[in-house]
Length: 514
Image (cartoon, rainbow, N blue to C red):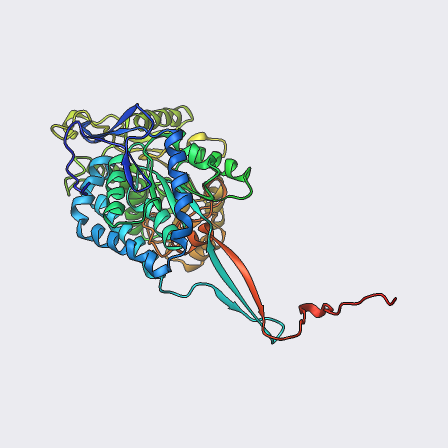
């Protein structure tokens, strides 16, 4: 099967297991739809628990042969994929945009991030691994070694359907693990193309496996006795269940990166041009459907009125349209379920006392691109509300362009107090020209990703990506992912013919006299 991105109507795709394309054990199918037009892109066979069992068994069988290869030999397969991702950048970026709805520069950036991650992981194969650690005993050599854990189950979201899978899989594979991957059910076409790349690269049978499907397939991966590590990126609700299941199986490891109720703090010392630019990018890029999107803007009273006026003006005018059009800033929401959730939380904000400033929940017909009437279209919803720690609209993640403005008085301490008063802790930003305020935020904001005078989006692959509190644990990304998918061994070798122990422990063997 070639890696063509042209999908003809009626084409049907299944699973990639043990080096073979299979329909699998199920008879039920599902479709990939374009969220901007409603058109069907392709049909997929829904993977079953039996398909997951076949995939995990194949990965387990392939593990010993794969781990026996050198780092460099394993990385060679990834280099082939790196070149394909880079060479097909424009083409695959359009596929991402067509399947998940984010505007075209974001679709292309998704592919760029994927090849950056593959480049990092494959390049790391030639870097030093492990650490030499001095021993108390001169005659001993002590060092740390890493070994692959085994089968890694990867469960990834729809909003970064090419980049995030490679966060999980590139590092896992180079480190010597085998992989079973379930893409999000909203973006199976991107998953299909990535699997075709692995097939084209000639990766050994069973080393990489793809099962298309829904939550039951993901749950089967998490529960499988063949799976040694689970890497999950997605909603907090699902991620917490994944972590709970893995915690009941002590032999397993996991890294779960989940959502957030992220905020930007705009202090009285902020450059308002930077603040406005950062807020619009953080709140409306990807139509608010990033785990790092900002749904709270915490603004000092000295600049609040001016900031509100300018932000509202931008939110009223931000370009919603065909995501393949380079003039578009916001594409559609991914599906009808997200439309309904967005509406519920907008209604909740009204019920909880919000003063609505921008309501583009239902766009005028003139704003919907011609031929896109069946898309999942919304615009920004912006409101101001007095801070109250009990307000659900300020505490619960919406995953859409739903944004609250909260005015604060006092110092940076009060702003950070409000900022931290949520269960999540993924991403956030502070905008200020006062380095003391920036440093206070840096040291006390409860987030895994922090930015100053920038949007709270835009991670680079060489940095850890993960949160604290309800946003998860671990970072399925770059160097930190290595911690998840490998085991460390502290190895000590004695170079002497005598045994001498550290801490003054006696090595003498004493026997009782007869």
